[in-house]
Image (cartoon, rainbow, N blue to C red; front, top):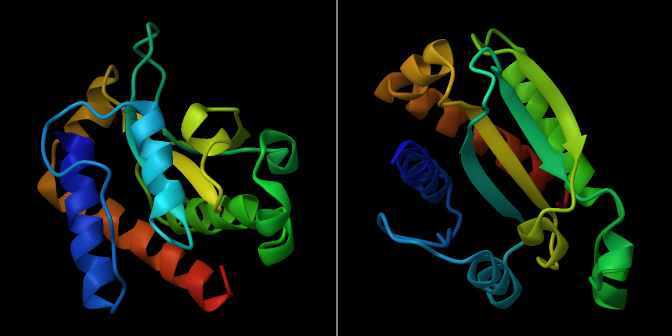
Amino acid sequence: MVTLDITRRLKRQLEQAGLRVMLTRAGDQTVTLAQRSDLGKRSGAWAFLSIHANAAKNTSASGFEVYYLPDAARYGRGIAYASARSPDASYRLAQLIQREFRRDWPLKDRGIKQARFHVLKHTPIPAVLVETGFLTNSKDEALLNDPAVREEIARRLANALLAFRRQGG
């Protein structure tokens, strides 16, 4: 429920800034990857953000990371996407998010990474996937379980999304 709480907090903050926000799920239910990307296709949104908490066999793995699709043009986003948005829009959004978390943040910055995740490949708008920390790491888990930290994560994500929107995202 960590990521759902972060998402709800982010939704509230963005709505307070005057934006319309759609969530792929309202409660603790399973939504398939295809359903998530389909919502991104149908929503008319200008950005798609997928929020996660990571896990690893190595319990020392720690930190925050942001993923984007490196070669969007190859994945059927089509002419409409290419002409309406620069091909690096997802990367620009990833950069804005990472910058928000570089400043005075307790978790390790694991950087911006390229990935061909389903929700990134099949969402025809700028899309990023954010890993907020590792639930398999005791320090990360303790931070993610703190409501004040989740509020701060939401605030920083909102700042990045609002900056992206101001830049014509």
